[in-house]
Length: 419
Ligand SMILES: *Cc1c(COP(=O)(O)O)cnc(C)c1O
Image 1: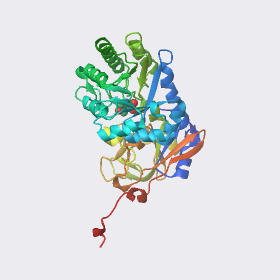
Image 2: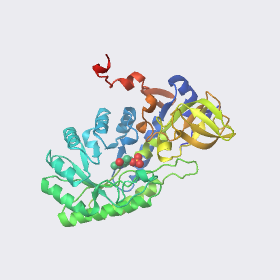
Image 3: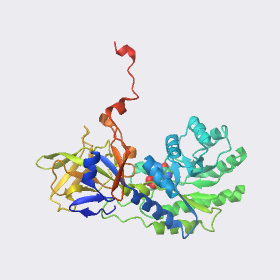
Image 4: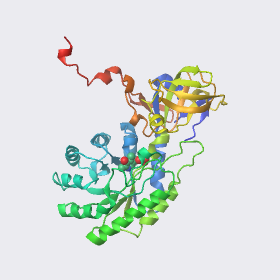
């Protein structure tokens, strides 16, 4: 959770007043602070500097706004992409193909053909994918994703490294996968695992590093292949609650690199942070449209629902909220902050102490930068909201709000229904 400053009772984001952003751009809006994006990227990159060369692959599924991709491209970031759409978006934002690593699961042959044409690196997820890729081209930089049988995360939906999940080459087949890749004419450069999301301590990362180092040594001993890049994936969590402690990224970098250096062939460590880089850079601003007191509960009705931010409804995630135009005013009542979607599961925050809320107030939902806009939908035929980038008080629109026309643009009514 980032600290936001207070000017005359108004919450400030990147030097701009939250309520003025809503007056100018409407509601709801996602607002991202450019400086915070650069700062987070540099923090995690610099944590590794004292120890060994590191590649930071921004996991762009967390937030793939072109302007944000562009900021990170300027910073020198690599990319972790999970679909051809993400690859093409990153190319559009100015990344060169050799900075993009594609990691898919259940990848179609059609998508492999498109990836080969784009010349990006491919992190192969299965032996079937390897064979199908080889039939298209072997002139591709590949690594393998292994299922490390080490899983962690903030919710069972996001644990990806456990043995029971669908991801990666099973551990006992991984040497065979490299053997087969060499036989087919590939020269694999690395080994990858991704354990899950929202991991707040160093131990699971240390554990997965040990597994990857062990595999690298097996591969070297049995096949004579020296892999250069050891990729521990993403999943570094952030403190969503005021009482949570941020991850100690220095300890993370130190623990991970000390297990690699001098212990295997890898000369470079790769990490794939999504949430860590983008979550706390962005707040969702949503206007209070209706206040309801049922006698035993107070509802603060806002114009953002799970169509705008699905994490609370989907994972039960906590997002801190504040009244942006009554910032730091004493708390008075307990509210559920709820949206306009016709389902009772539609909530943003539950049982929160807030100052007295009135129609027209602006609720700021913290840490909305990762898996916020990216997981939003047009459910109930509500277009996705605007996205705004602020830097030193200057605000720029980076995505226009969707209109009903935008939503209907791809639809067709068969002519026989028009008579
Ligand atoms: C989602 C994902 C990430 C990023 O996860 P965060 O929790 O946002 O850090 C990294 N690597 C892979 C392969 C992923 O699927």
